[in-house]
Length: 211
Image 1 (tube, rainbow, N blue to C red):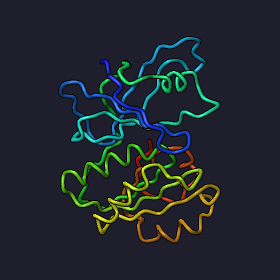
Image 2: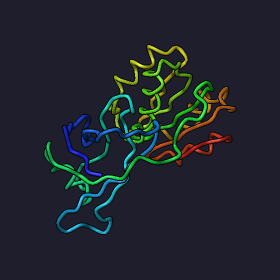
Image 3: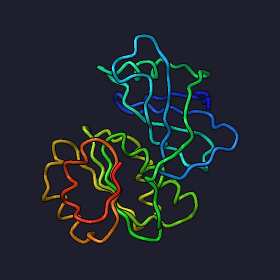
Image 4: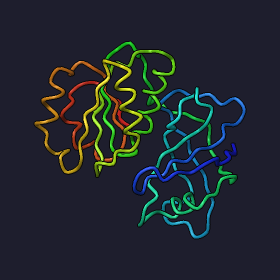
């Protein structure tokens, strides 16, 4: 399947948001991902394919992905960053099991950096379907410039049972702070996505879905 790039935005530091036109009807479940194939000159050992979580919801009518495109970078990321609006990229159909099964339950989300993409999709999907968000989000990033922070805080204000806790490295290793916040959340399913999350998985000794 060919996707046409509509827009690329440098939203925070070296993090870019790519927006693609959605081909005629293409459905997916919030939290799923797509594989992208971008042939380019002199590919490195990681090759010309990558998998990205879909940041946008099925209701939004576009396919958006979030990724680091800094320096140093892989040959794929450099080629992706050079794409101009109107360019095309090959992509698979959406797939994956990183989806919510029962939105009526309380949930815990743990995001590291651009791992927020799949979680943003799930949260925004609930909001757009007028389903109350009952969740706690633990969000870690390498700086205080959290991607999508303003949008997430709008959701937090709209949904009284949705709460966000931010952690900037190296504070992620301050397990005591996290334990204090999760002590009452032991029975809830947890969804983890992104870098660095392995450092805190041991704090959650119950069902988890890790991306």
